[in-house]
Image (cartoon, rainbow, N blue to C red; front, top):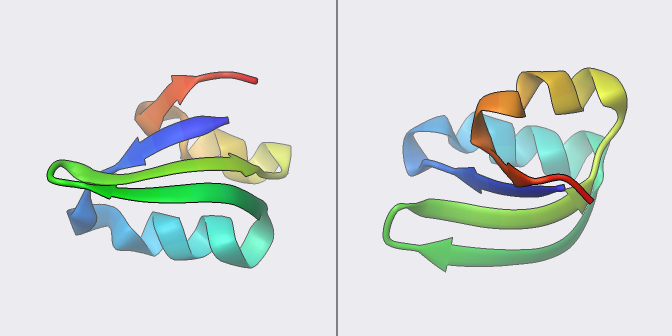
Length: 54
């Protein structure tokens, strides 16, 4: 999945690293863009920040 997580929710970035597999990370002015694979229960928590589904 592709995510754009605002810096104010960096706890979710840590969650992705802890529970998933990060393919790439890009720091942008508006937040952190991640391309990652995560379990379904984590994906649900990230739904508001999803850019696209792989």
